[in-house]
Image (cartoon, rainbow, N blue to C red; front, top):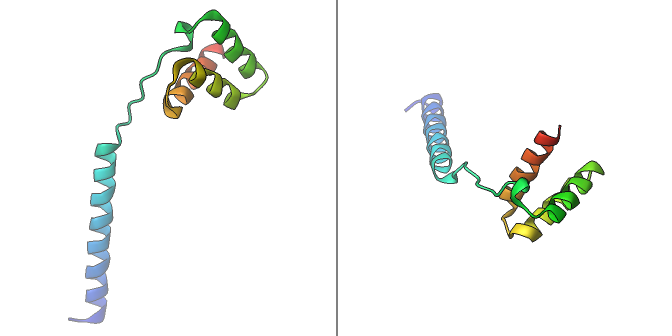
Length: 88
């Protein structure tokens, strides 16, 4: 087999393997994140989160949310993103 044909074949197989791995990851990743809205939390927690967001402290707001709900990081970030979006 010609060396260039062999190289093209190897590259095609590598590209196919990469594509298959990406599709497998995509199907098992589970893009849905469920969370409890900040509006459902006690008023004191809501106020603390809003105060942290008003001062530009997103990380603090996420930490406060996680302390109140025991939610994983992705869910807490999603909840705070929604809260920021609703606040404008």
